[in-house]
Length: 86
Image (cartoon, rainbow, N blue to C red; front, side, top):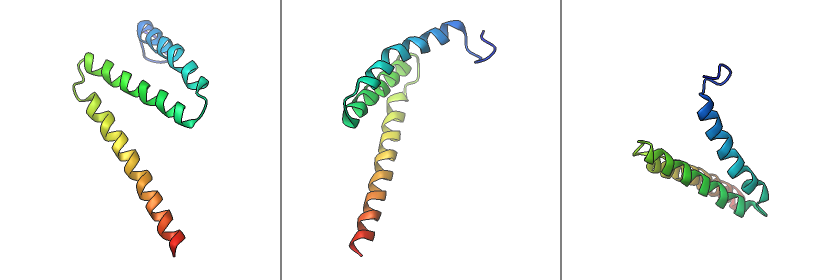
């Protein structure tokens, strides 16, 4: 086991492989919308992998996180619009 990270060499290799797969896609995104699509695909893939490995709630957790993020953004936008209208 790697002392610096606390992860096995196999786990570190998996993380390096995932980074090698996703990082170029993220860097190649032409705009923020494309970057968001790539990141969403990455999150879905991670949730599917977690489900396959026994975390039956992974996709639900992802949905909750996205819903929380959207609600926060909507709340901030509504507050900003109300201030601008005053």
